[in-house]
Image 1 (tube, rainbow, N blue to C red):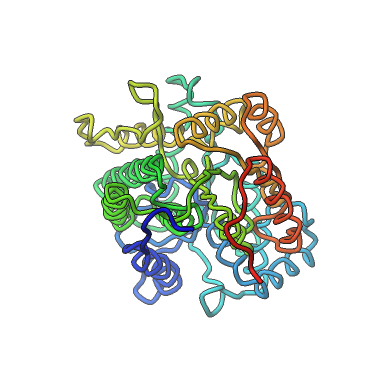
Image 2: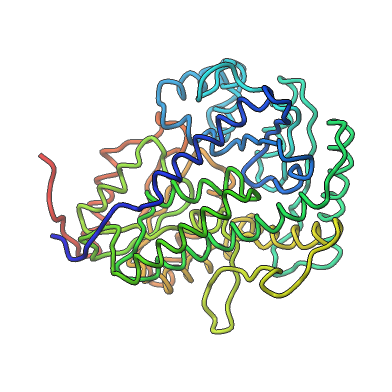
Length: 435
């Protein structure tokens, strides 16, 4: 039964259009002499931006997630990777991406658009191997930046400069392989855009502390993805500003994502993309998934505010810092990225548990749903330690098994049964049952 008013998100259509345009721009940029590069959603994408205004990227994980929604094509990609000798327990996105190259088929039509170079950060256990192999089969130059220097709370000047110097060296490498002169002004502008995008996304997520929640996580997936595509672009930062203003307005007017909201849950890691209807099933119980550390912190940049709460990180621009040189921009940029929440748990699962407990407390979460995601070794690292840590804090937790990018490893009926049992422990009954 509806308790709150609801309405569609006005910027929804624009978000879908921006996403589609991103993939088409990448495919078509060679028609006008542009540059294509590929890397992960965690690649330092402000750096290639200095090569010109006609530089376009293809980020691997969002591409893999998009393919996962097309079950037939995804199966073809998985089969192609397996036929090449790669095991099913590797990163599902990586296998899909490789399979798409092997098949020479692009999800958005035509042959797979070969990049001019691959450019990647190394922190996840799969990332370097992903683009090392992609470069081998595409015969494409590749460059890696090692960002695995320990948790941000332990960052030293030496560790920061280790990453900063790699970033500066990568510029020289890009100039050499593209034959283009690097433009520091474009780089500085891209750094500022990325800081705006990632701070604004955190601000949008903070607005979900409101009751009723103005956004549900299934909707948030279509919004956060823009930062995973091109967080250093002006169009991304500008869109998040527009989105932030709309979500603020929804909070002020009491507009709910789930009109029958009476319970708040949070998830973890990537969802099973081919089965997002699991989030609609939650709504039959009046349960809204307010987000997750994954949705908030994959691209959102956060800080602890003076009052002890979690909020968007203050940008150097807001602090009155004028960014004028390549070296200064690179150092600020690397520091910004090294504070990314989702990079912290690679070093110690307890860091992730504490961040999850913060979300539970500040977003008013009643229970946590952990996806034991066999498709992502990186974000599932330490997940059972997280379960124990949350349970020890008295937080109700359920787990379900699946794979974000391989629908052969997800059982919808079994997962619904686990949701039913979990809602029973939270003392929540369904509002309605499908015939």
